Every structure is written in structure tokens, then in C-alpha cells.
Image (cartoon, rainbow, N blue to C red; front, side, top):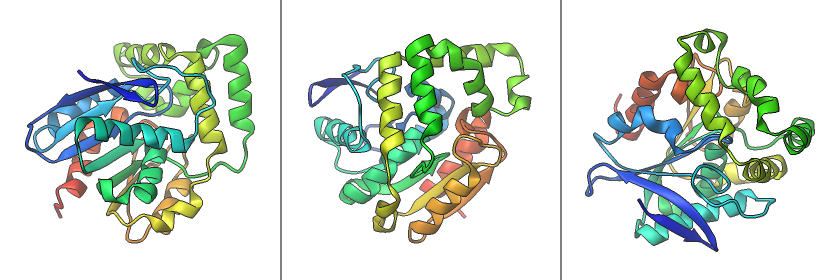
Length: 261
């Protein structure tokens, strides 16, 4: 699998699916890696050449010194596309990946066909949550917030299912390097994507979780209202909707991407 140089940062990329199919690029949330999408690979690769990557600071990608910015994370994506010789993609990003998608939709409109912004936000007026989280992770590590994070990511019903699924998800989170996690939090804390939303021209689907405390329904509704022609679908999930409802999530995304009624 290719390792892409983005201004000195090595970004880990994985590519699957038919070589001549249109490209769908997936972008991970804060505290996960490209494997958060594993359950969507099979349905997505029936129709698309799938490009997944680990955001800088996560997974197998490098962890340059922070802070990062949404501009930096967006330019990493453009570096990947340029290195792979890909002119245009469909985009599906969840949480932080949806934030990057908003940046791309406004700043790189010529590279985006359709845009899925999932369980995401464009601005946080209250920075306290992020300031406190940075302090805790610096002092105590990711283990100190792991259980609270799982409660924000998934509904109680999902967390009480057979433990092996939650064990793997928790291990993915704990494998994230603290410096990369903090640097991406700083990008999220400082972003204000609100002025960009009306500039997005790509057909856009916003996917929200009805029980999502991390990027609440109102935040997703605001994005839908500000992007011309955007659609909104609400799933009965919390934050990491694609892992909580993998089949329904794939069906929802493909219905939009393939133009099915």
C-alpha cells in the first residue's frame, strides 16, 4: 500500500476495488484509523475504487509536531490525490473526516464529485471541552478518557452487545498516539468552517446520529441548511454511526452516491 509524502509527513494509504471504477475516498474520525471503515469496504467496492488513509497523527501515518489546522489536514488529502494521479473523488468523512470534507468542498471544488459529511460539525463556540481534553491526555494519556469516549461514540444498547466488538474499537482508540490526537484536537478546537459552507457546490449528503452527543443533530442540521441543496439523513445511532449501524450506513451512503431513489 502506498505511503504518500505530504510536505514531509508520510501518510499511510490503502486502495481497494476495481481499477476503472469512480473513486470514493473515506476519512477517519478523531481517535480512529482507516479500519473504522472495514465493514463498509465490501459494499463500497462493488461500485467504487476505494481510497482510505490514516489522517496525520493517527494509525500508520507520521505524527509531526502540532498543532495541526483544518487547512493542513485538507492539503494532506490533495497531496494524496496528486501523488496517486486522481483528479476527482467522491468523499465520505465522519466527524473530523467530515470537517476535512467541508474544507475540500469549498477550497478544492474541482476535485470533489459528491460529498458525504457524517456526524460532524463546522465550529465549536465553547472550547472548554477541547481544552480540558488536551490537558487530561497530556497528563494521563488516552486511557484516562477511553470509557467516556466510548459512551459518546456509541449508544448504551450497542455498548452492551458481545464485548469483542467494543474491545477492538477501544484498542483502536488507545493505539492512537497522544501527540497526534492532541494536534488534531487543536485543529478542531480552532476551526471555523461556517463561512465556507455556502461556497460548497458539490451535491452533499449530511448524515447525523439521533443520539450523537459529540456532534449533535443541531450541528449537522446547521451544515445542511448552509450548503445549497444539501440533504440530511438521521440514523438511530450515536457518534460513530458507520460502526454502530454498518449495513444501514452503507445503504444510505450508496443510495446517495449512486443516485438511487
